[in-house]
Image (cartoon, rainbow, N blue to C red; front, side, top):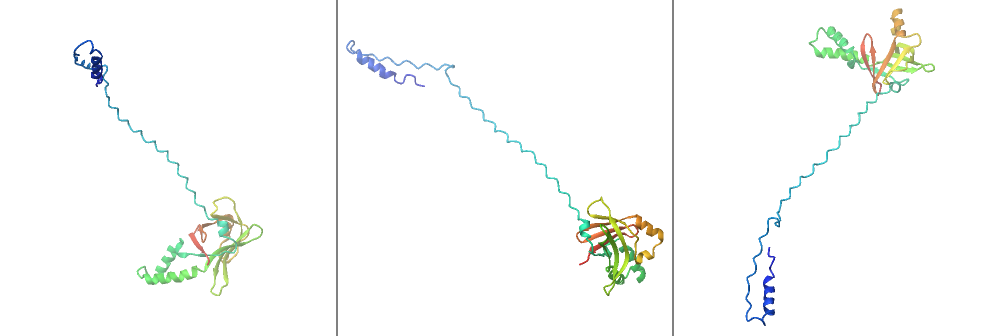
Length: 228
């Protein structure tokens, strides 16, 4: 650092001013620049590299909306008065028993062709059987189990007025006998069986808009599809 960079010019000016007094101006060497003291030195300290700020914490995940519970089919609407549902033999619990009967009829279970032929004959008859609810008196319904004959007429296996019970899920139509049952099936039943039928609750469950299920205490699950 040159603190006296303009020193020689000042000295030359001084010699010119005193020329009348002296015959020569002796030029003194410029004074040496003082060594900077340790105190005057500016220490250059490397600036620390700033630490990059931490990324903001991710916001907490919003709780996923609760999955909407599936809407159950409305059995009362699906089983509207007058709408028939036909028996689906191969989807029902009685199919195993019917298949066993066909195997016995054809003499064993080795000839699958004969067994299937037998089952198709049984199924042709079974597909004519069905159930429906008709309109009864006041708020009552009339449960009808029927069989369609080739000429279009109907065999009534069971017919009974029922009252609709409250409570339970909406995919179930819960009923109870409100009168004396009639029909071909009833004619073969002992009195105690008829009394049990009248006392028991009869439930038809809607699986979807075209399928219903009856849980029979003896035959198990009976599946029916809406007639086309």
